Image 1 (tube, rainbow, N blue to C red):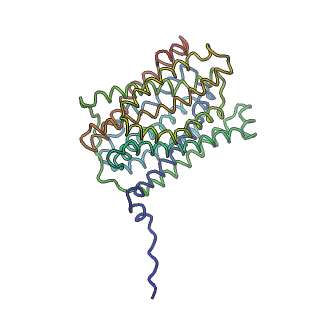
Image 2 (cartoon, one colour):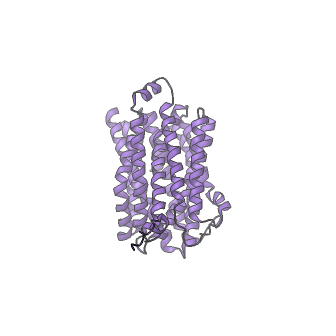
Image 3 (cartoon, helix red, strand yellow):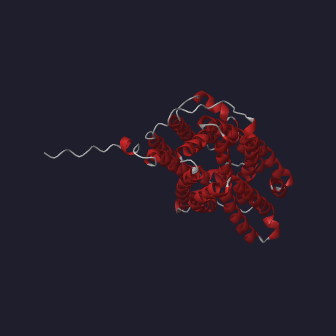
Amino acid sequence: MTEPAPRFSLKDKFSSSHIERYAFFLLSMLLFGLAGGLFRGVQDNYLAWIGIGKAGRGVVEFFRELPGLLLFLLLAPFYRMAERNLIRIALSISVLGVLGIIFLGSSAVPTVLFLTIWSTGEHLIMPVRRSYAIHSADPGKEGRALGFLKGVENAGKVLGLAMVSLVFLLPKVLQDRDNGGRLGFVIILSITALIVFFAVIASMGMSRSSGSLERKRLYIRRKFTRYYGLEMFYGARKQVSFTFGPYLLILRYGAQTEYLATLLGISALINIFFNPVIGRIIDRWGYRTVMIGDTVILFFVCLLYGFAHHIFSEGTALTVVSVVFVLDRMISNASMASSIYVNHISDGHEEVAATLSTGISINHIISVSIALVGGLIWQTLGVELLFVLAA
């Protein structure tokens, strides 16, 4: 008598090896990367559509970055919660933020409120996904693990940003935009909410990690002083380049949603292959080499952002700033080197998770300050001074 074929079990299948164990985690991050690409592709143009100006953009960013500043407080209620459960909660919060913008986000105040809710979900995921990736890697391959995770997320972003470009090239959407409507934004945000919902479902299949990681409210230790300083630097750099760079393209050069989404998509596509390279460089030559190279390149990036329109003709300046925009997003991923640095000097998994969470909060102390001050500097003293100070 023939024995029945063994019953296929996803749970058993994805727990059977070191790689497969994290398949659902990677799928969740791929979907969240896709949703992030969709959302990021319309965010700045949507803010411009509701009338947010130069100084106002800084105020919006203050509230968007506030969850990062208060991350250690946000994590406090989830004390000792398993990482997979925290990821599910964070994804669910992000869904609520998108739905709020769709149904109530036709003016500035509700839009900023629900943008902050979306951002809360994003920031809750940040330290968890990094520590999950690091702890899943073999010793000495943590950089490759983070690089692979970044590559997976960027694969999702490429698809999401491509979808934004395609939607905003539809005749009906173009006609609606010419009439001052927001049909294209609503379509993209609706797809975003659906994708994040699928990410929540995928996260249900994540394997339980070996014990829950204790997340201290604020973890300050002298041995991490250099890391805290690096996070302050990355916070300032991220705020100026990532917040005011896109708005410079929109307000100074008239970039439409599909143009900005295309640039973001090109950046994400390049980073699919470039992030693993950064990871391998970190593993081979060390995190210090990557950090130094990142700082040098950023100096020239900021100068070109601020002065391209003085050096080149209008059309050429747009091309130069667009190239700089892509390069800026490529080198920004070098910040993963600081996570490897923390892992090297930490005493255990719990300390890694606590330090990364604290680092994100420190990062955002600078970010929220730069957001407010940067918008006012641009409004009153010009974009040139803003990027000179950033350099």
